[in-house]
Image (cartoon, rainbow, N blue to C red):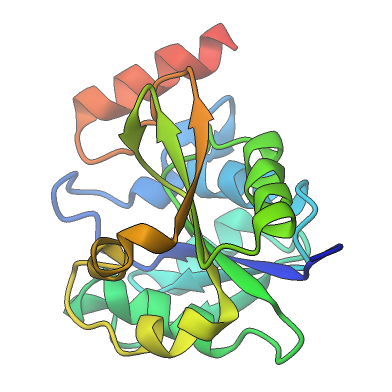
Length: 200
């Protein structure tokens, strides 16, 4: 498939309950963490970027600012990550060929990695494109449009993991030598992320 139209859905609606404060607003290099994630998504070759907000949406929206992303509010965010995924995938345009599901607290995911997922989709047309970091599957993950109904049917806090498990044979891998991008669920995670970011 030449030049597929891929949308990125950034999942940032959660309550950060384990951290105790909104991880989306943690500072990294003088910017809110989520703003950095959005900027990196927009710097990729994706056709559109949808940012899904939920908990403290107005405050987080104001902190991120208008960068070119499309904002979707998820009123059901308390019911788990799948509700943000469903809200984001549901608004993707009819001309979108695939969606990349990206976590809002992984700002070290680079535009180059996102573009590798898109390029691998263009080359293989596989239903699922997933990065493998030092042999271990991770995020973000691309899903072809014909899987959207399955994504929209997911409930609870599992995200799309059950679909990937069910469709193992449909996964094309992007193998990477580096460690997986860290996410932020604790203060230790945040300190580790800052150390990585400052070392870049």
